[in-house]
Length: 330
Image (cartoon, rainbow, N blue to C red; front, side, top):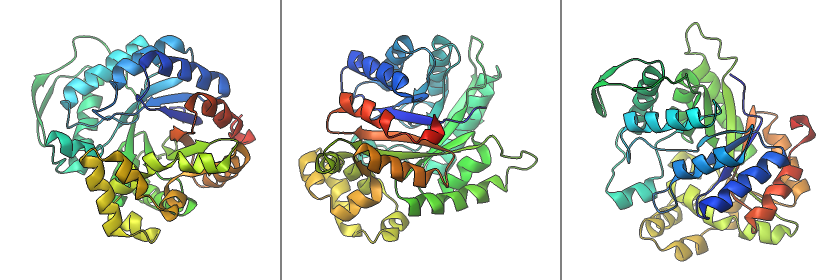
């Protein structure tokens, strides 16, 4: 499996046709993977990815991430296999526990996230292999299978906490680690190494430690920083306590941010974001500043994914993001 070199996330808060154009721009700018994020209150990610498959030629593409709560894991695997078929084998299956703040809007408790994601990944691999599946765990399946041929699509697990990061390294093809600060990336590398040590006879050489970082790039550094508030609010509101503690972020304030996001009070949530949170959870600045931060991250990680918001003007930011890619990725 080839590792992601440099990916980019497109958030379906824009019309699907616009996202297709953005993906084409990203491909020309030098990105080799495009992910579409999932929240129920945005446009559908698989419809978006269908359009991205149509408007691009070579980039790999997939959900970044989808969760196995809102949709049955067997159905999700079939959707992913369909997308991969449509895209002529360019699919990447990004799977994770989902955003706690928005899942709560749908009355999902997101119980046993580690086990749920692991089981969803294992069942997907069986389905991709053409097997029929019986499963009795955090979800059920009885004699389930795909009535068409698939390939073994690479599965990346979205992670932020220690257990999910270790699990990804032990069982998945890659991890999409939610982090933007070198301190978090160094910590995650240690968890990845712990997980790789448990892979048995597999060497783990092909495992891709991809950092999925919130990035905001603009010619004006202050505008870049200000546009980072919305994604940083979502990251902070869902961050595990150890992550907050690592950056000396007030847990109570983070809880208030999560509560306001769940209540749909987004403006109030964004206003609660502090400079400390922005520094911890977003790479923001001019192309040269972003390039320096990315180079620092790639001293530890294998790959980088530029996540939301990209910048105050997403269309222009994609080209600027391409300018921010280190030469080592060229």
